[in-house]
Image (cartoon, rainbow, N blue to C red):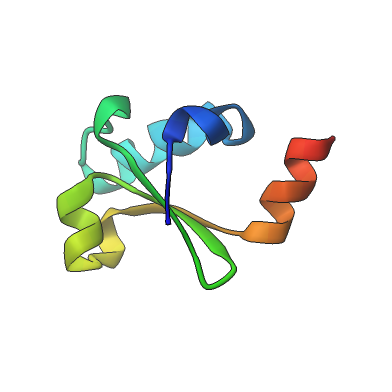
Length: 74
C-alpha cells in the first residue's frame, strides 16, 4: 500500500535524507519520494522508478511498521 510521504515525514529525521544524498550521490526530491507499507515494513524509496526496480541503492530507509505506529502515538 502506498503511504503519502506527508503523513510520515515528521517521523523521519531530516538528516536521513541529507546523508542518503551525500553517500549515494542521488538528489532527494521530496515530491518524488515513494513510501510503501507492506509485509510489516514501511519503506521510503527515492522515486517510483527506484521502487519498481527494487533497487536497494535507492532505498532511503526501511522501518518496522510497528515502530512507526508507536512513533505516531508518542
